[in-house]
Image (tube, rainbow, N blue to C red):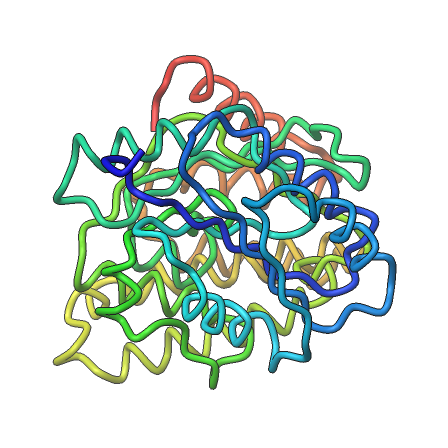
Length: 318
């Protein structure tokens, strides 16, 4: 046992009592023999504490409950308690899929140069049933991370403690892009690698922050991108990719307006996404189809995207 690295899974939570038991079960059923699960409760007023007390017999589970200054304050505080050499982050309304910790440790041991890995994530509904959509892990790209087109999804991530120490942890002064900021800074000081295979679910339900924030998150992401673009000496790789960033953000606005039922504004931003997109960009045909869908009320782009995701899932393409 002493030769195996200790793994810490951090679970920040606040009033997710109806979901957290599924999360804990998916963690505690892992076959890796040397891990701890660290729950950071922000002072829940629902049934969360009662659920946590039901797991008090398992020495691998440790939990703290007190008010935190938000999600990332809880994550930073968790690192002060965590004993693991390898750290994982799992949201309290999501679940691991199968055995995740053992292959993670094996990958880190086989690739000592890699300090952060992320995997595929399966989107589920409120009852944790698959919706058919999968977020595939791709090699890290700062533009895709900034614009949210293909970001690293936190619940599929593990990192060596050294990454947190080198980056200084999460920047709590940011509001909605602290994870984006962390991954960008991590990529500048360490090697990040995708690990193929579905590692976690991503439950989307009315109470989830990702559903509530929508436009606000896009605005914050765009402000972050503008801030980095204003530092050409520090982020030279972004200067030649301004049009791609603009196109990505326009597409996010189009999708969000469409989701909220404003097809007129969705069409405006869909056209802007096509206009700003570099012609040789891989997503350009999809953007054209998306524009057609906006005008004809069809779903060609969604069907094409769904087929492409399925093809990549079964063939291992990235």
